Image 1 (tube, rainbow, N blue to C red):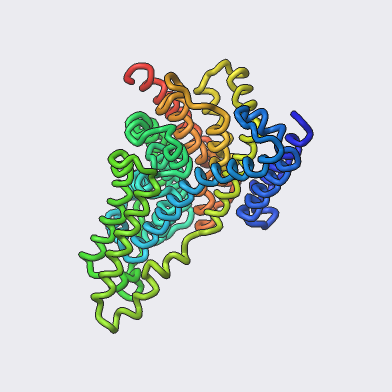
Image 2 (cartoon, rainbow, N blue to C red):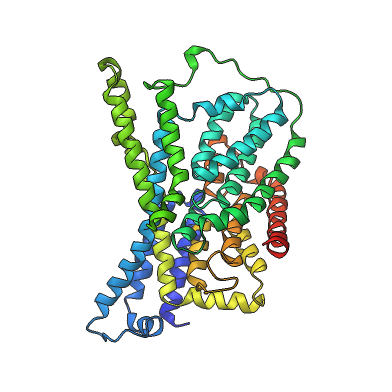
Amino acid sequence: MTTLTFMIVLAFVFGYACIATESLTKVNKAAIALLMFVVCWTLYMFDPMQYLSAMHPDYTGGLAGMAEKVTSIIQEHLGDTSTTLFFLMGAMTIVEIVDQNGGFNWVRTVMKTRSKRALMWRIAFMTFILSAILDNLTTSIVMIMILRKLVADHQDRIIYASLVIIAANSGGAFSPIGDVTTIMLWNKGLITAVGVISEILIPSLVSMIIPAFILQYQLKGELHVPEVNSGTEADLGDFTELQRRAVFCIGVGGLMFVPVFKSITHLPPFVGILLVLGVLWTTTELFYSHLHRGHDQGGTMKRVSNLLSRIDMSTILFFLGILMAVACLSEVGVLQALGQGLNVWFDGNHYIVTGIIGVLSSIVDNVPLVAGCMGMYPVAPTGDMAVDGIFWQLLAYCAGVGGSMLIIGSAAGVVVMGLEKITFGWYMKKITWIAFVGYFVGIVCYWALRTFVF
C-alpha cells in the first residue's frame, strides 16, 4: 500500500469513526460523509496516474487526458449512486403523501386488542409486511406512532418497539425495495426481485418469529388501552374515506408494482418509482381541486409541493457522501484487496464472510459495508458470485437482519431509539442476544434451503 493510498484509507476510517460517534461529536453524519467524499477524491488527485494504470489498464490518454478521465470516472460512479438516491427520494415522498393524507389510519384499527401477546404478534407481522413494501425506517415511525395510541405503559412499549426494529429489518431484507442495501444490490443487478423474495423470505421470517416468540414471555396480562375521544383523534384531513383508500392503494400498490415495471420495461427501478410518484401526485392534486373552497386552504399544506420539504435530505446527502467515498476506495484498489484477503482467510466460505459482515453491520452503518462488498467482489457468470448467487443473497439477508443486534446498527433502530428514549445499554442487555439467535437461525435456515430445496 502506497503512502497516498494509506492517507485515503485513513481519511475514510477517521470519517467513519466520526459517523459512528455522532452522538458524542454532535456533528451530523451527513456533513462528515460529504467531507469524506471530497477529501478522499482530493487525495486521489495528488497522483491519479498510479491508480489509472492499475485499475484502468486500457487507459492510454497519458497526463494530457488524465483530468478528463478522472472526471468521467467520478461521473460514472455518481450516475450509479444517483439511481439509488432518486429511488429513495421517490419512495420517501410516496410514503409521506400516503401518511399525511390518512392512508395509514386503517392500520391502527387492525392492531386494536386487549391481549399483550396478541398485540405483539400483530405488531410483528404488520411491521414485517409493511417494511417489505415500504422502507424499514418509515415503517418503524408509523408503527411507533400506532403503539403510542395502543400501549400506555412505557416499559411494555419499549419491548414492542424493540420487536418493531427486529421485524422492520427482517422484513426489509427479503424485499428488493424494503431496505437501502437491497435497493443498492437490486439497482446494481446483483439480485433479482424474484430470486431474493423466493429464497430469503423464509430465513427473514424465521429471524423475526424466533425473537417474537422469546419476547412474548416478557409480556403478561391485558393492555389498558387509553380512551380516545373524538377531540383527540388523529386528523383525518380533507379527504373522504374512499379517497384515503385510493391514496393508499395507489401509493402502496404502486411500490409493489415497481419490480413488475422493471421486469417488463427493463428500465432502472427509480424510473418506476417516479412513475408511481407522478400518478399519486396527479391523483391528490385532482382530489384537492374538487374540495370545497373552505376546506382547500386547510389541505394546502398536505399537497405534494409542500410535502417535498419534509423529505429527510440529510439522509440523502449522507448516502451520497458515503457511497462516493466508498467508490474512491474501489478506484484505489483497496476493496478488491480486502475481498481477496477475506476469501483467502476463510477459504472462500461465503456463509462465514457474509455472517461477519452482518455482525459488523450492527456496529457500523450497513450502507457502506454493502457498497464496499459490491466493490470488493466481481460478479461471476456462474456459481456463488453470480446474479442471485449465494453470496449476494446472503449479503442482502445479513446486512439487513444483522443491524438489529445493536440499536445503533440500523436506521430503524436509531429512529426508534430517539422516539422511545431507549438506551443503548438496555437494548444490548435485553435484546441483542435475542436478535442474534434469530439472525443465526435464519442463516442456518438459508443453508438448509440452498442445500436441500434449491
